[in-house]
Image 1 (cartoon, helix red, strand yellow):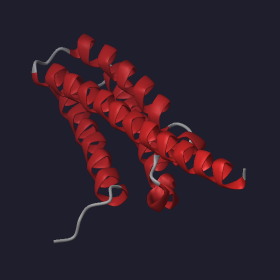
Image 2 (spheres, rainbow, N blue to C red):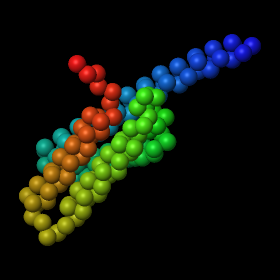
Image 3 (cartoon, one colour):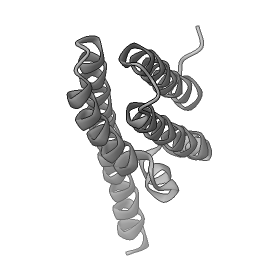
Length: 142
């Protein structure tokens, strides 16, 4: 009986781990697509679309990185201790999105000044994504 229970627990843990890996991969793909859409809108100088897509990015960031508990559950066991990095990156990204909203609302800026400042904030979002990936991923050392 004990062996059956132990085997069941091991199999269940493997299934949960596999599901978490797939969920993480799925959520990261959504974030990547969301960020790419924002970048494209910026390149096309479509401010209204940029703002709409930033709202979507913020929603997706909050969904994936907004809870330490969720991030811990998604990460493989050997990386769970890095969950705070991911959560902090999510918070920083949301701050930069808020900064872009403030820039676009600032009537003292010319259109070009607003675009340049918003683009700087967008670059900061990208930096946060790369930092998180570099620090949290389990890169093979070669």
